[in-house]
Amino acid sequence: QESFMGETSVNMGESEESIELISRNGSIPPVDKPPSHPEITLDFCNKRTKSFVNENTGTKKFMFDYTGTAFKNSIFEKKSSWKVLEDLLTEKKMNVIRTPFILNYVNQKLDDCAWFYALHIFKGCIKSTIGKRETFSFYMSYSVNICTHFLTIAFLLAPLYYSYDNEDTAWKQFVLWFLPIIASLSAWLNLLYVFRKSPFGIYVLMMQRIFKSFASISVIWIPTLITFSFAFLLVMEGSITPWLSLNQKIMNGTVEASHLESVFAVFQAIVKTSSMMLGEVDANDILDTKKWIASTLVLIFEVFTIIILMNLMLSLAVDDVKELMQEAEGEILKIKVKFLIEVLQIYEAWGDWFIKTKWISRTFPFLTVSFHTKSPQNVLVLTTDNNYGYSNDQSENVEWDIIPDEIAVSHSSSFWNSLRSWLIGLNLNEYLKD
View 1 (cartoon, helix red, strand yellow):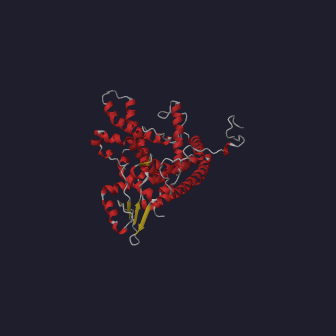
View 2 (cartoon, one colour):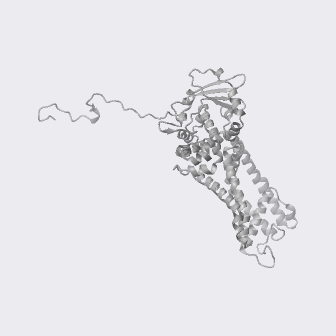
View 3 (cartoon, helix red, strand yellow):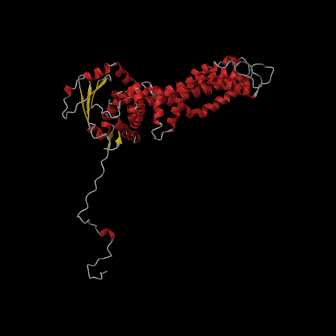
């Protein structure tokens, strides 16, 4: 088309892609991307690490460069160190976490927060206020934790409370008898959960793995147990103590049994049969009945439960233990890194409040130490017997002879340092052997 004023014509047939827009001031300036935290990869960690191995003693020395990362002062480019670790776990980059660059940071922070390991219940309460959405296992574990403390306190105060009540009621006796049982079981479960991060964590993981295997074959074990329980109960009913009669009162045989007592008789039969499945058959008690059906039943029971089913469970347990032994250190490393992430989250949210609150600083001075913002020492000395020590060296050209091996010995000679390393520290030689 041509304009009415006779100016330059524009060909409207051209596509929009062919029309190039040019700014009034010339070329379009490049858009600068906002600075971001560098991606923590295997290559990045290796480039930031210098190492030396003493061929005579086997001592390993490492120097790390944490500048330009969140590991230096807890946060870099609005990204926290715990977030970097969480991303590595989420993306399953265990090969990156097992590099000396990351392990040195994790181990130093674990040593610094070893005291927090004892404040298990407070960690759960404080973490629940951060606002981070937690998993079902988190709420279950801390429910057991709180339940343990509540039951323990109730058990200690119950005698004092009932001392003001002169009536010797059955309910009072039941409470005083039942509370320590439940409190002990709850404390045991809580202890197993806490031990997952301890030097005994491997055995707790074994129990957990075996329990999962048992749950998978319980669809066979439970029907087998119930079937033989009822069979033995019908054959042996009322003959000896474990095999109670369904129609006979427990305390006095002249009165017909109640519904609850009949249920208890079935429960007793199930408990007795479960102990028989573990090898405590007591065949003489059954054979004394001199019944064909009883002897045949014992023979079938021994073949299918003791020989076949129990050996199946043992073989699964052995396979699970072998598999777990190969993965043990990796699983424990995940647990300890998750623990460190939780502590760093708590300190990022509540660290300033700990420091400003006077009664906390006086009563719990260790809470006022901002270990999450403390720069890690960049030199690690590791001996063959897993003694390690830290130092700082900012020189560009490393002179390894200047860094003495005694750093590791002096660090491990301290009782508290050795205790912290044993309690929550990492087995660095195990992770760095490759």
